[in-house]
Length: 265
Image (cartoon, rainbow, N blue to C red; front, side, top):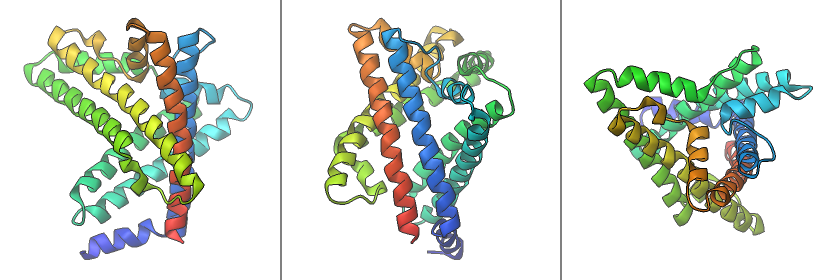
C-alpha cells in the first residue's frame, strides 16, 4: 500500500469522518424508505406522485422541521460522498473492483445530496424532465446517442450486479453484524438489494429503449422506472413488492451506518 492509500485509510478510519459517513448512511436509508413508501402509495392509490429522490425531499420539506432536516441531509450526504471517494483511493491498488464501486457510490451520494441542497434552499427539481432534456441533447448527435446507450448499459449492469449481490449475499461483507441480527439484516439486505437492482435495471433498459426508438421521453428516471411496472401483468403487485423492498433496503442502510462507526473504533 502506497503513501496515498495509507493516508486515505487513516482518514477513512478517523472517528469524525466515520461519524459523518454514518449519518450519511442513515439519511440514505431514510430516503430509500420514503421512496419505497411513495412507490407503494402510487401502486395502491393511497397517495404519492413522484416515487424518487425528489419526491422524498418534498415529503421531508413538508414537515414542520423539514428545512433543518434537509440541511442536515445535504451535509451528511456530501460528507458520505467524500468519504466514499477517500475509500476508493484507499482501495485503488488493493481491490480495483471495490474502488470503482466506491467511486460510483460517491457519485450517487453526491447526486442525492445536491437534490437535498436544492430543496433546502427552497427550490425544486423534476428528475424526469431533466433526464428527458439531457437525453434529447445527447441524441441530437450520433456520438451522443452512443454515449446514452453506453450509460443505459452501465446502469443496467449495475442493476443486475445489485440483484446478484442480493441473491449471493455479497453485501454482507459491507456490514459488521453478528448473532441473530446478522440473520435479520441478511434477509433485509437480500430483498432490498434485489428490489433496488430491479428498479435500477429498468432505468437502464429505458435509457437503451430511448436510444433505439429515438424517443428521449423514454429515458425515465427512478420514478418512471417504477411506474413502468404498473403497465406489466400484475404490475400493481410488482410495484408494491419493489416499494416494500426499497423500504427494507433503507433499513439495511442503518446497518451500514453502524458498521462504519464500529470499524473506526
